[in-house]
Image: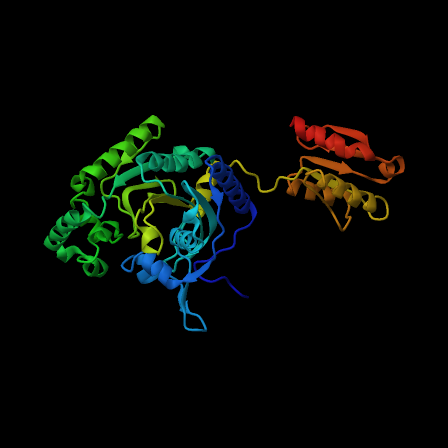
Amino acid sequence: MYQKVKGFRDIYGLEARYWNKVEKVFRQTFRTFNFEEFYLPVLEKTEVFNRGIGSTTDIVEKEMFAFDDRDGTSVSLRPEGTASLVRAYVENKLFSTPGISKYYYIGPMFRRERPQKGRFRQFTQAGIEVFGSGGPSIDADVIYLLYKLAENLGIKDYVSMEINSIGCPSCRPAYNEKLIEYFKANIDHLCGDCLRRLDKNPMRILDCKNESCKKITADAPKAVDYLCDECKDHFEGVKSYLDALSVPYKVNPMMVRGLDYYVRTAFEMITDKLGSQSAVGAGGRYDGLIQLLGGPDTAGIGFAVGIDRLVSLCMLNETEKENDLDVFIISFKDVSDKTALKLANEMRSQGISVDMDYDFRKMKKQFSLADRYGALFTVVIGEDEAAKNTAAVKDMQAGTQEEIETAKVTAYIIDKLRRN
């Protein structure tokens, strides 16, 4: 028997229904904020991520599915969406359009990390990117959008928002010096990865998941204490706009982003409902990334959310059913089979979900199928009904039944569904 690759999974049944619900809510919410959908390729040249994400990140060093193509070009399955979308934005010269650009994407990402609860080697992210605005108001609106997604999914009580400012190229060097000084004084407690990053990118140590490193970072210098005046004003502006929008948040001075391109505003939406406290969505500002990947000096901000984890949170509410069918038609071979097939597709053309038993088994078996599919109505066409060109329509929730002319069944069902 063949088995799936480690870290990959099949999604079906009830979970697939929740998955569909989450993606639908995402698209509806993104559109209300005037975001345009962007379809990105799954495969990119590895240099897009080496340059865009940063060579010292865990993603580039350990987690990418990277390989040489037949022509020797190094390519990678995308581990995240921002670098890909920025590459597309620059390559297609979308920066030539006046005003700000707002895009969203939904699709699979790939990282070869240790599989665990809520974390897979193929996972799905939805994300948004805003190019062309550097002010704190757009930062707050982007964070509000993330909060609104949780609200629209009915899970805002399961999550909380944390924000921070990690400075800019002007003030970060001084902060990095303080970090290096602090970590060198505690060098015996650092893991091998953090030792290697100490002089190159000490802020990455703050994001290390090693328990020994986490204990040391708890007392490390905080970025908010070393912000330049411009970054301080920007961060205060973000907080004031969030207050105006009534978004509940907590300032977490130890939060950093795991990717090198972030500056200033950083934020995470976290939960403690999935075993241990973890991020289900995160993002921040990356004003230098577009220029880094060959475009003009353009401000940018965005976030990504893990659909896998959000689906798990949504399933805590138990609002979806395993199956939810509008109508199941019960019919019999050489009696009403053709009538049933014609009626089923007549209703489908009106947007009604319909199924039937194509093997035309005994009535008891067919009613069992209707129950299994969660049918709201059954339409029975037996010998008596077929002779009179009628159907027995049963409301499975109310337990009531009416005999309706076959030609009027579709209109009758539409009216019933509208009332329900």
